[in-house]
Figure (cartoon, rainbow, N blue to C red):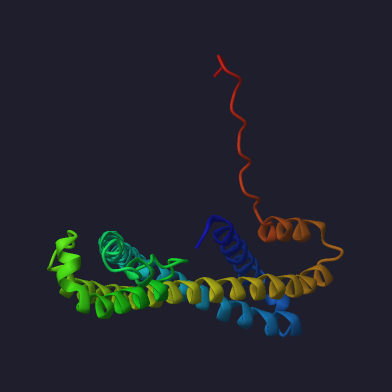
Length: 222
Protein backbone atom coordinates (compact mmCIF):
# COMPACT_ATOMS: atom_id res chain seq x y z
CA UNK A 1 0.00 0.00 0.00
CA UNK A 2 1.44 3.35 -1.00
CA UNK A 3 1.16 6.68 0.85
CA UNK A 4 -1.74 7.96 -1.26
CA UNK A 5 -3.69 4.77 -0.56
CA UNK A 6 -2.94 4.99 3.17
CA UNK A 7 -4.38 8.52 3.20
CA UNK A 8 -7.57 7.17 1.66
CA UNK A 9 -7.81 4.47 4.32
CA UNK A 10 -7.29 7.13 7.00
CA UNK A 11 -10.14 9.13 5.45
CA UNK A 12 -12.48 6.15 5.52
CA UNK A 13 -11.51 5.37 9.12
CA UNK A 14 -12.27 8.96 10.21
CA UNK A 15 -15.63 8.82 8.46
CA UNK A 16 -16.40 5.55 10.24
CA UNK A 17 -15.69 7.20 13.60
CA UNK A 18 -18.00 10.07 12.62
CA UNK A 19 -20.87 7.72 11.78
CA UNK A 20 -20.32 5.73 14.97
CA UNK A 21 -20.44 8.89 17.07
CA UNK A 22 -23.60 10.02 15.29
CA UNK A 23 -25.23 6.62 14.84
CA UNK A 24 -28.58 7.72 16.26
CA UNK A 25 -28.93 10.36 13.53
CA UNK A 26 -28.42 7.83 10.74
CA UNK A 27 -30.35 4.86 12.06
CA UNK A 28 -32.35 3.46 9.16
CA UNK A 29 -30.84 5.87 6.64
CA UNK A 30 -30.98 4.17 3.23
CA UNK A 31 -27.73 5.62 1.89
CA UNK A 32 -25.73 4.83 5.01
CA UNK A 33 -27.23 1.36 5.34
CA UNK A 34 -26.39 0.65 1.69
CA UNK A 35 -22.89 2.03 1.35
CA UNK A 36 -21.32 1.46 4.76
CA UNK A 37 -21.28 -2.38 4.38
CA UNK A 38 -19.95 -2.01 0.84
CA UNK A 39 -17.14 0.24 2.06
CA UNK A 40 -16.26 -2.17 4.85
CA UNK A 41 -16.21 -5.09 2.39
CA UNK A 42 -13.79 -3.30 0.05
CA UNK A 43 -11.64 -2.18 2.97
CA UNK A 44 -11.32 -5.81 4.10
CA UNK A 45 -10.26 -6.76 0.57
CA UNK A 46 -7.65 -4.01 0.54
CA UNK A 47 -6.16 -5.12 3.83
CA UNK A 48 -6.02 -8.70 2.54
CA UNK A 49 -4.33 -7.61 -0.69
CA UNK A 50 -1.87 -5.52 1.30
CA UNK A 51 -1.01 -8.45 3.56
CA UNK A 52 -0.57 -10.66 0.50
CA UNK A 53 1.84 -8.19 -1.09
CA UNK A 54 3.80 -7.76 2.11
CA UNK A 55 4.15 -11.49 2.75
CA UNK A 56 5.13 -12.14 -0.87
CA UNK A 57 7.68 -9.35 -1.13
CA UNK A 58 10.70 -11.47 -0.10
CA UNK A 59 9.61 -14.34 -2.34
CA UNK A 60 9.26 -11.96 -5.28
CA UNK A 61 12.66 -10.41 -4.66
CA UNK A 62 14.31 -13.83 -4.35
CA UNK A 63 12.61 -15.04 -7.55
CA UNK A 64 13.84 -11.95 -9.38
CA UNK A 65 17.43 -12.47 -8.20
CA UNK A 66 17.50 -16.16 -9.17
CA UNK A 67 15.92 -15.39 -12.54
CA UNK A 68 18.52 -12.72 -13.34
CA UNK A 69 21.41 -14.98 -12.28
CA UNK A 70 20.21 -17.90 -14.40
CA UNK A 71 19.60 -15.59 -17.35
CA UNK A 72 23.12 -14.18 -17.12
CA UNK A 73 24.56 -17.70 -16.95
CA UNK A 74 22.69 -18.79 -20.07
CA UNK A 75 23.66 -15.67 -22.01
CA UNK A 76 27.32 -16.23 -21.09
CA UNK A 77 27.22 -19.81 -22.38
CA UNK A 78 25.45 -18.74 -25.59
CA UNK A 79 28.08 -16.04 -26.14
CA UNK A 80 30.86 -18.62 -25.78
CA UNK A 81 29.20 -20.86 -28.38
CA UNK A 82 28.85 -17.91 -30.76
CA UNK A 83 32.52 -17.00 -30.40
CA UNK A 84 33.73 -20.58 -30.89
CA UNK A 85 31.45 -21.02 -33.91
CA UNK A 86 32.85 -17.87 -35.47
CA UNK A 87 36.34 -19.37 -35.18
CA UNK A 88 35.20 -22.70 -36.65
CA UNK A 89 33.53 -20.85 -39.53
CA UNK A 90 36.95 -20.23 -41.05
CA UNK A 91 37.21 -24.00 -41.61
CA UNK A 92 33.53 -25.01 -41.87
CA UNK A 93 31.66 -22.32 -43.74
CA UNK A 94 28.17 -21.62 -42.48
CA UNK A 95 28.93 -22.47 -38.87
CA UNK A 96 28.68 -18.86 -37.70
CA UNK A 97 25.29 -18.54 -39.40
CA UNK A 98 23.97 -21.45 -37.31
CA UNK A 99 25.23 -19.99 -34.05
CA UNK A 100 23.94 -16.42 -34.05
CA UNK A 101 23.02 -14.49 -30.92
CA UNK A 102 19.28 -14.35 -30.29
CA UNK A 103 17.58 -11.06 -31.03
CA UNK A 104 15.64 -9.79 -29.27
CA UNK A 105 16.94 -11.53 -26.15
CA UNK A 106 13.55 -12.55 -24.80
CA UNK A 107 13.28 -15.51 -22.45
CA UNK A 108 11.78 -17.71 -25.16
CA UNK A 109 14.44 -16.74 -27.71
CA UNK A 110 17.22 -17.54 -25.25
CA UNK A 111 15.69 -20.93 -24.46
CA UNK A 112 15.16 -21.70 -28.15
CA UNK A 113 18.73 -20.74 -29.03
CA UNK A 114 20.19 -22.86 -26.23
CA UNK A 115 18.16 -25.82 -27.48
CA UNK A 116 19.28 -25.42 -31.10
CA UNK A 117 22.91 -24.79 -30.08
CA UNK A 118 22.97 -28.01 -28.06
CA UNK A 119 21.78 -30.01 -31.07
CA UNK A 120 23.83 -28.23 -33.75
CA UNK A 121 27.04 -28.47 -31.73
CA UNK A 122 27.15 -32.25 -31.58
CA UNK A 123 28.37 -32.88 -35.18
CA UNK A 124 31.19 -30.35 -34.74
CA UNK A 125 31.98 -31.02 -31.09
CA UNK A 126 35.70 -31.60 -31.71
CA UNK A 127 36.07 -28.45 -33.80
CA UNK A 128 34.29 -26.28 -31.21
CA UNK A 129 36.45 -27.65 -28.40
CA UNK A 130 39.55 -27.04 -30.49
CA UNK A 131 38.34 -23.45 -30.97
CA UNK A 132 38.30 -23.03 -27.19
CA UNK A 133 34.77 -23.98 -26.15
CA UNK A 134 34.99 -25.75 -22.76
CA UNK A 135 33.90 -29.38 -23.10
CA UNK A 136 31.68 -29.16 -20.03
CA UNK A 137 29.44 -26.64 -21.79
CA UNK A 138 28.05 -29.42 -23.99
CA UNK A 139 26.08 -30.64 -20.98
CA UNK A 140 25.86 -27.36 -19.07
CA UNK A 141 24.00 -25.55 -21.84
CA UNK A 142 20.93 -27.75 -21.42
CA UNK A 143 21.21 -27.85 -17.63
CA UNK A 144 21.44 -24.06 -17.39
CA UNK A 145 18.68 -23.71 -19.98
CA UNK A 146 16.35 -25.88 -17.87
CA UNK A 147 17.28 -24.02 -14.68
CA UNK A 148 16.62 -20.70 -16.39
CA UNK A 149 13.27 -21.90 -17.73
CA UNK A 150 12.21 -22.97 -14.25
CA UNK A 151 13.42 -19.69 -12.73
CA UNK A 152 11.49 -17.76 -15.39
CA UNK A 153 8.29 -19.64 -14.52
CA UNK A 154 8.70 -18.93 -10.81
CA UNK A 155 9.54 -15.30 -11.54
CA UNK A 156 6.48 -14.87 -13.78
CA UNK A 157 4.25 -16.43 -11.14
CA UNK A 158 5.59 -14.05 -8.49
CA UNK A 159 5.08 -11.07 -10.78
CA UNK A 160 1.56 -12.20 -11.64
CA UNK A 161 0.73 -12.59 -7.95
CA UNK A 162 2.04 -9.09 -7.26
CA UNK A 163 0.13 -7.61 -10.22
CA UNK A 164 -3.05 -9.34 -9.08
CA UNK A 165 -2.71 -7.82 -5.63
CA UNK A 166 -1.95 -4.36 -7.02
CA UNK A 167 -4.80 -4.46 -9.53
CA UNK A 168 -7.30 -5.77 -7.01
CA UNK A 169 -6.28 -3.15 -4.47
CA UNK A 170 -6.63 -0.32 -7.00
CA UNK A 171 -10.10 -1.52 -8.01
CA UNK A 172 -11.22 -1.66 -4.37
CA UNK A 173 -9.93 1.84 -3.70
CA UNK A 174 -11.90 3.20 -6.67
CA UNK A 175 -15.05 1.60 -5.31
CA UNK A 176 -14.45 2.85 -1.78
CA UNK A 177 -14.02 6.44 -2.91
CA UNK A 178 -17.16 6.20 -5.05
CA UNK A 179 -19.18 4.73 -2.18
CA UNK A 180 -17.81 7.36 0.19
CA UNK A 181 -18.95 10.19 -2.08
CA UNK A 182 -22.42 8.69 -2.34
CA UNK A 183 -22.71 8.10 1.40
CA UNK A 184 -21.64 11.69 2.05
CA UNK A 185 -24.95 12.87 0.53
CA UNK A 186 -26.74 11.49 3.59
CA UNK A 187 -24.61 13.67 5.86
CA UNK A 188 -25.16 16.79 3.76
CA UNK A 189 -28.90 16.22 3.75
CA UNK A 190 -29.11 15.44 7.46
CA UNK A 191 -26.97 18.37 8.61
CA UNK A 192 -27.81 20.94 5.94
CA UNK A 193 -28.84 23.37 8.65
CA UNK A 194 -26.29 22.29 11.27
CA UNK A 195 -23.04 24.15 10.67
CA UNK A 196 -21.23 22.54 13.61
CA UNK A 197 -21.97 19.01 12.44
CA UNK A 198 -21.08 19.86 8.86
CA UNK A 199 -17.76 21.29 10.01
CA UNK A 200 -17.08 18.10 11.93
CA UNK A 201 -17.89 16.07 8.82
CA UNK A 202 -15.59 18.18 6.69
CA UNK A 203 -12.74 17.38 9.05
CA UNK A 204 -13.57 13.67 9.07
CA UNK A 205 -14.00 13.32 5.30
CA UNK A 206 -11.08 15.49 4.24
CA UNK A 207 -8.59 13.64 2.08
CA UNK A 208 -5.12 14.77 3.04
CA UNK A 209 -2.94 15.81 0.17
CA UNK A 210 0.55 14.50 -0.33
CA UNK A 211 3.15 16.72 1.35
CA UNK A 212 4.69 19.19 -1.07
CA UNK A 213 8.28 18.65 -1.97
CA UNK A 214 10.40 21.47 -0.66
CA UNK A 215 12.59 23.13 -3.30
CA UNK A 216 16.33 22.85 -2.79
CA UNK A 217 17.80 26.05 -1.36
CA UNK A 218 20.10 28.02 -3.67
CA UNK A 219 23.76 27.12 -3.51
CA UNK A 220 25.42 28.57 -0.46
CA UNK A 221 22.17 28.75 1.55
CA UNK A 222 20.55 26.40 4.03
